[in-house]
Image 1 (cartoon, rainbow, N blue to C red):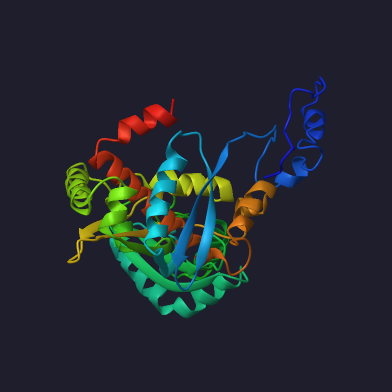
Image 2 (image 1 turned 90 degrees about the vertical axis):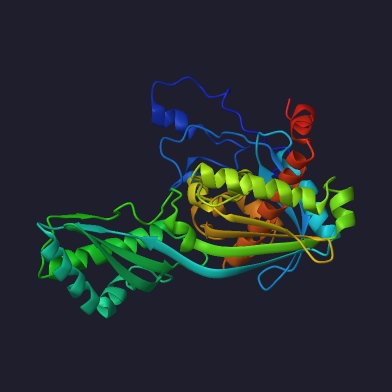
Length: 378
């Protein structure tokens, strides 16, 4: 990607004027400058380089993606790409992964504070009576946002109004914030029950944090991926047996229950973060995206069945950092850039994450985990 183009900040001329310094940052052989990153960074001073490796190809079958895809992964962790590559190979040799987006919704949850619970209760009734109007107000701020649902939560003298949107092919955080601000302004101006305070986010949406309650709901995209791997391929590629891998995941799941984990999984954040970085996603959303459910079973035929459900995969194929040159190139490599490609990207990410779960589970089950990191990560 961008072969032969190297950033350099060492040749910047001395200047006492910061703005003048930044104006010399026509880095990457003049192809990029501070205007390229407008809206993405403040006080732009240069680039932080990360190596990008290619895993796969991923073989996937489904409604949103069908075919073989090379997967760009940006990381500094040795053994990560190799581990995902092994899981992808096992899936490919088994006929491929299946994956599907089950639901899509993004929340913003404003909070309204009142003198007492009685006022709060009357306010919830008024919100219920105004749902059609609130929908019109919210959607007037965006060409793409659709307000799907409005829920109220009354606790003491505070009311959280959960606004649930569809945001098209964008991840949608900024979109739902702007739409929800319009709703807050409408409520402030027209409600007969004046709040003492209004907060655009009451910290109940799950934005950039993993919560137990969010596992049963959807933030972004709820995606399921699955694969069935014959015993021979488990033996030759994953270097274990279906039963030994299942035994490890059963013990691992019990450990995660005891420690209060949100979901059960091995290292979903590893693969997702690497693809997030490579494709211009909001990396902080790994906080909620990496909470998922890993399932492994031995079939009646002695094969390994594995699935992964990600209920909070908040990603986009447009907007945010997806249009930056390298990130766009990585998306285009998978045919996942632009309108109509977000669900395709989501199922690819989930299938890759499942491949990583297969590989790390096998490595730990058979005692290969440390050896792999000694060989590739030192």
